[in-house]
Image (tube, rainbow, N blue to C red; front, side, top):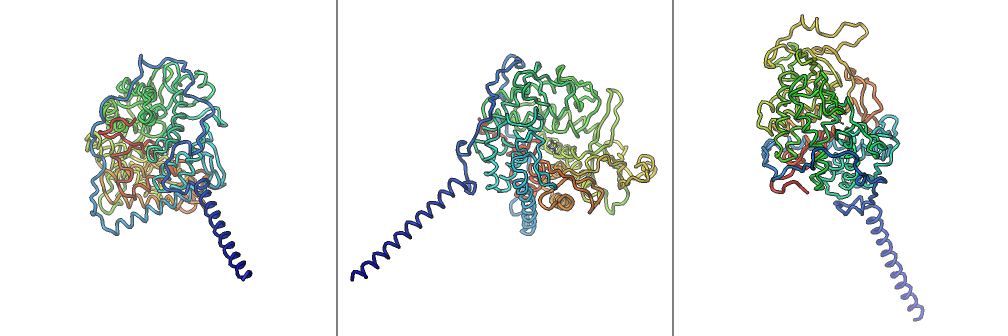
Length: 601
Ligand code: DMJ
C-alpha cells in the first residue's frame, strides 16, 4: 500500500516537474522571441525608444548660426491645400492582362528580389555597417563617411521588396548612427543628402517608424549648416569643423547638380517636421535659378558649373543633362509635384529648360540600313558648348543622362505637354536600344554617336561617306565600336540605374507592355555580366561579352536604385504609384501630399 502510494506520489511529482520544465522552456522561448529576435515579428511599428536609438554626439540643431538668413523672414511652405494634379499613371485596367502575362511578371519580379537579397546578405556578412561591399575582395569600404551608405540607401528597397526582417535589422543599426563620428574631415553634401537623408525620409514615409525621422532630423540639422555661408549658398564639400564654427564659404566653381539636388529632401523634411527652415533655405536657391535662367550662354539652361561664392553666377559654357548637371533638372518638375502644384515657379523653370534642351541638346542618331522593318524611333541628349553666339552640339551619350526620358515624360504628364511624353519615350527607348547595341547587352558609361542633321529631329538615311569621315579613327590596336558609334569614351558599366529608371517611368505612364520585355532583357544582361559568386560588380568593358573584367565595386545605388526600379516595373503598378510618390534622384520615393490633407505635418 505504502509502496503503491509512494509510486503514485512519484508520478505526480515527475508530472509536476515536467510541467514546470515545459513552462520554463516556453518562457525562455518567449523571452528570446520578444527581447532578442524582435526583428522577426511582422509588422513592427514602435516608438523610437524601442529601437535602441542613440543621438549623435554633436547637436547640430543647437549650433548658433553665424550668418544672417536670406531676406528678412523665413519662407514657409506655400499656403493652401495641395492641388489635384493630373493623373500620371496609365489606367491599368484590372483583368486586362492574361494570367500567363501576370505569371511571367511575378517570376521576373521574384528573380529581381533574389538578386537583391543575395547582394544584401553579402553586404550584411562582409561589410555590415560600412558604406559599400567590395564584391570581389569581400570587404567593406567607406567612401561616404562610413555611416553605412548601403545600409541606409537600401532601407526602402528592403521594405518595398517585403524583406521586412532585413529592414528591421538595418533600422536597428541606422537608429544608432552618429553623424559626428567619421574618419573623414568632410562629407559630400550632395551624396549625403540623396543617399542618407533621402534614404531615411523615404523609409520613414513607407514604414512610419519614428526613429527614422529622428535620424533624418539630426542629419538635416547638420546639412542645414552647409548653408551658413556669407551668402547662404551651400558648400558641397562640407567640412565638419569649419561648419561648426560657421566658417564655410560657398565655392566659385560648384557643379550645378550639387546645388540643385537638395530641394526635394529639404522640402520633405519641412513637410514632415513642420519646421520651415529646411524649405526656406532651399527656396533661396530656386530664386537664384529663376533670376539667372534667361541670362546664361544657353538661355533656359544653366551651365554645368556655377559660381556660388559671388551670388549665383553662370559664366561657364558647357550645358548637359549628364554628369554634374543631371538631377538639378530632374528636381524642377518633381518639386512642383511635391509642393502639390502650389509653386508655379518650378513649372516655369522646368518648361523653359526643357524647351532649350529640345531645341539644342536632343538629337536623332544616324542609323545603319540594317533594320528589317522601320528603324527605331529614338533620341539622345548630348552636350552643348556655347559662348552665347555659337552653339555647338557634342553628340555624346552618357549613361547618367538616361534619366532624361523619365524626366520628360513625367513633366509632360504634370504639365499637359503630350509632346514631352513622346520625347520621354524616344529618349528612354534610345538608351534601351543602346543596351542592345553592344555584345554584353549593356551600354557604356560614355559614347559618341553620329547625329542626323535634319530639322525637327526628323530621321535621316545612313550616309556611308559621313561615317567614313566622322566615324571612329582607324587605330590598329583599338577595338572599333559598332556602327553607328563614332567613339566609346568610357567602356564601363557601373551598375547604374538611369536607363531602367526611364523605362520604368515610361511603363507606368504609357502602360506599353513591350517595355516589360525590354526591361527583362536589360536585367538579364546586367546579371550575366556583373554577377560575382556572392554579389554584383561593375565591369570594365561592355564590348567584351563573356570575358570582361570585373571591378571591385558595388555602389550603394545598385540596391537602392537599379534593383528597385527593376522590381517595381515587374510589380503591380499600384506599388509605389507615381500618383502617390515622387522619387528623389537616388530612387527614394517620398510621399506626395494629398489635396485633402494639406502638407503633412
Ligand atoms: C546616383 O547616386 C544618383 O542617381 C545620382 O543622381 C547620379 N548617380 C548615381 C547613379 O548612377
